[in-house]
Image 1 (cartoon, rainbow, N blue to C red):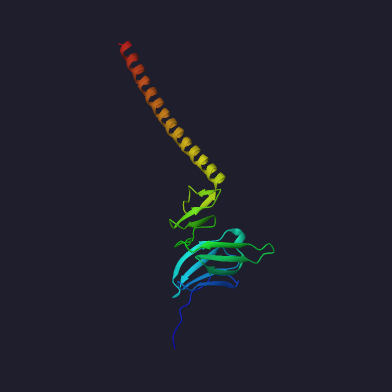
Image 2: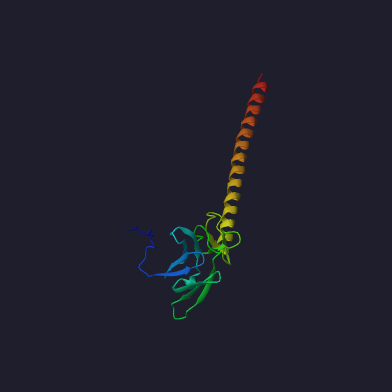
Length: 175
């Protein structure tokens, strides 16, 4: 008896949707309601993950042909989408990113940029701009705090020197 390889799918109760690329013995797996498509070799080794936009999360069927994976959604306003076999990265790029086919790097979608506090995720451009302003203000406040501390130290040193000179002057005038 031969033992078959198996892989756990995403933790959900939806039915997985499969598509096969017979030319390269590749299996594409998606589950309705999730934004990932997994690309497996015929021996069930993960070859990559692609990100689906929100409007294509309810995938009901997939078909692979000509280097593209075509998907149809099951919503009342059904959508048709396609993704190139080149747009699968080794890791999940995130909700607001996708895998750039030529470089195999994660790139943010339109109106999103890398988050300065967490560069592995994409955030809305206006949010990142506000974050950069906050970081800039924090840096400015810290710089003014350091300058204020130096001013206090200089003031104390100046007062000490002035007091010392005054007490020396008083002693010399009493002689």
